[in-house]
Every structure is written in C-alpha cells, then in structure tokens.
Image (cartoon, rainbow, N blue to C red; front, top):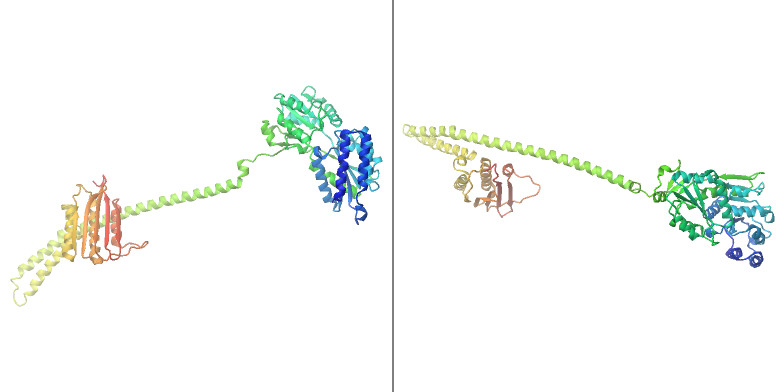
Length: 615
C-alpha cells in the first residue's frame, strides 16, 4: 500500500530536483533544491496523523536510477515478495543515488540532508540499500541518518562491505563475483579464445570494478589477452568489438557513463554492443540473459530478491536475535541462450555439466508432439483397417471366384447330365416306344371286333408318348445345336414355342460368325429358351420377338414380349430361372440385364464376347 497521490507526486518532484543537482550543480545549488523540496513537503497533508494504523515504512535506496539500473528487476521482485510476506500494510519509499555520477566526498552531505528532511521525526522502519554504491553510502552515513532503524543490505559485493559495521538487528545478502569462474566459463565454452574484450563504463564505480577484474584475472597469465574498453566512447567500443578476430569473446560488465562522459542506458548499450559484435557476448546478471549474452554462471535477481525479502521480514519481526544475519549468495548454475549458441556455432557439448539451455526453439516434434502421435495412431489404425479390408476383399474375391468356378462346374455338370439324359431318351426310350406303337398297329386287325377300340387307343397313346419323350429329349439338349448351329437352333425353338403354346414368336437372326465356342452357343440358346418359357408361363403375352446379332465384338441376344410385365424391386432376390440365365452369361464373361414395368412387357438382354477362347 502506498501513500497519497499528492505525497507521491511531491516525492517524485524532489527526486527529480536531486537528480538534476547531481547532473549539473554542486553542493550550494543542491542546497537550494533541497530547500524547495522541504517547502513542498511541508505542504503535504498530515495523512499519518489521522491513520488509525500506521503502515510499515520501508525506505529503498537504489544505487542507480530506475531507467538504467541493473537492480530494477531485483527491486520490483523484492517489493512484491516482502509485501506478500508481511501480511500487513506496507509503504515503500524509493530513491536513488544515480551511482554512476555520485561522488561520496562531495554529494553525501546533501543527500543525507535530503533524507533527514524527508522523514523528519518519523524515521522508516527498515532501510534497504540495493547494490554497492547505496550500501557504501548508507553504511558509512547511517549514524547521521537513522541509527536506530535496522538496515537490510541487498546484494552488495563483498569487497564493498569493508568498513561497514552491522548491528544486531541488521541483515545482508552478499554476493561475491567469482571473476576467475566467469573467465573460466568463457574459456570452456570457447576453448580457442585468445582475446577477451571487457566492456564497461568509466564512472568511478565502474572503474572500481575494472580494477577488480584486473586483479581477478592475473592468474590467467599469458593464456589469454584481456583488453579493457572502459575509456572509449560507446561508438568507438562498437567499432572495436566489430573488428575483433575470430578467436575472441566479449564480457559486458556494465555501462552507465561511457569514456566520453555520456550517460548510457544499460540495456540499450548492451543491445548496441551485441548488434555490432563480431564475437560472442557474455555478462554478469541474470536479466541480461535473453537480451544478447551467451550466458554462464550469473547472478539470479529472482532468487536474491526472494531471500532478501525473507530476511527483511525477519528483521521487521525482530527474529534475528543479538547477531546480524549475513547470507552469501552464490552465482546461479550456468544458463545459456540457445539462440546465441546457434548464432555463434557453439557446441552444447562445450557447456559445463548441469547447464540449462533457455529459449530453445521447439522442434516440430516438441511443438506438435501430441498432434503427431494422434495423427500417427490414426494413420496406423486406418492402415490396419485398409489392410484388413484388402485381405477381406481378397478373400471375398477368392470365395467369389471359387463360387463362380463351382457354379460353372455345376452348370457344366448339369448340362452334361441333360445331354446324357437327352441321349438316353432319344436313343433308347424313344425308339422302344416307337416299336411298341408299331407293334400295337400290327395287332390292330387281329383284335378288330366289338372291343377293338382298346387297341386303337393303345396305339395312339403310345404314339403321343413317343412324341412327348422325343420333345423332352429335345428340350433337355437340342441336337440341332450341334447339327445345325446356334442360329438354326434358335429358329427351330421359336417355331416350336409358337406351334405348341399359341404365342406368336417372330425372330430376327443375323448372319453369325463361324466357330462360335460351344459354351457361348449353349449359353445363348438356354437364355432364349428360359426367356420364352417364362413368357409362356407368366407374362400372358400374345407375341414375342427374338433377335440375335453381332455387336461390339460379341453377340447380343434380345427377347421381348408384350405381356403384363412386372415391378422390379431393388434388393429382391431373382427367381431361379433368372438367376440361372444371369449365371450362365457371367460364366462366359458376358453381361445380362432385364428391363420390365407393369403393363409394358419385358426385355431380356444378354451380350457375350467373342474372345479368342470363344472363337
């Protein structure tokens, strides 16, 4: 929870005045600015006097302004974590030293006066300096500010803690920049490196860190040449990193004021260096990962903020006892940007054990894993169904082929039996009946008398029986097919049906090719015979027409009538006669169809090919 809007605006106004002083003026002019700020503060409403419950007041002194502070991610996370842990209203007061230009010898007194005027007789409950410059300033000036207020030193480097005493209620989260480890990481990731360019600003605090790096890399000796670019303007630094050789690397430490004295935004400077660099860029802070650095063992702002917030809560709850609490933060496990690894062709095998690779571009498998698995499963299932259908179809075709073969054999056997039976009737039974009829005729004079009519009747009955047997033999297997051929056999059948059934059957039989296969001859004759038999039995027709002619490389048979016809129904099984006709035609590779409508007669059509085997 924050103070009133009027208070925040005035505080922002005072901070702007202070930053303006640091950039332009010295102590005298800053005193004027402070006077204006104090006058403004005096106009604020006395909100605290009317509040029933005063919120916990936490003063945060950042080493750098929010616009270019490497600790802003840390500060934001710290505020959130502490507010959640306290479970009570808390008011945060933020200010900054602008540490890149802060001169302790000249500017400390003015800033002390500003803070004392700001809080007056109501000091904060906790002071949290963030970063080395703020730690040095407050640690050395605490006695002049809020000596009774506990302080929570946030992420100062161990080297800047010298000379700062911690009281019983104080705490600190201290980091130690392991310079040898940072350089060892670069050399492990890039084993062929011979030059490392250290990019940093040239403010007092930045020059301090350049000296720290010089001291920490003395053990490298002649293994690698280290080049420091802090005295150059940012534009010249860009040119230098663009001209680096292949076996080079860049360590971007920090940049707030370049060698020309120009203020620089930390993140903007990093982006410009990364864009111009001819070699991989490494860094120090976790928030730099993803902004252009390759990676390595970095300071994790999130972890540091969480631990600092927990210590701050314990300080406010007075849980630390009689000794200060100091927690040393180690650099996080190495983490790397996958995009930078690919950009500089760095093998992941070069990374230290336990490294984490972030921002990895997902492969098609990673991005569409479940879709691929589901699609593959569906494809396999469909393939299995298709295989099953193909197998089933093959089995069905085999069964149909066997059925057709069996049907053909049955028809052939049936036709053979009919032929055999017809011969028996024609060659044996029919002649015997004929002889009996002749014998009966011879006996007729002897038996003339009153009872002679019985002899005549026997003769006539035997004659008719002989003719019936002869007709039956013809119907079973007309010898005309073998003796006269298909055309004459059909003409004879049409005449026989016309004479014996009162049906006018005309026929039109064109000249037929020679050498028609016996199977085709029998097939077409039987179809015509069955069609005429159905007309006589079922149609009630007065006339019928039979035609046979060559067509489309085969023979086409048409049998039509003017009878009552019938209704063709889909899905109804055909009668035995029609099924027999269809099966006969199919057996010789032909086509069979019936067209009929009630009151419109019936047409039976059969076409069989005259293939080489039938010729």
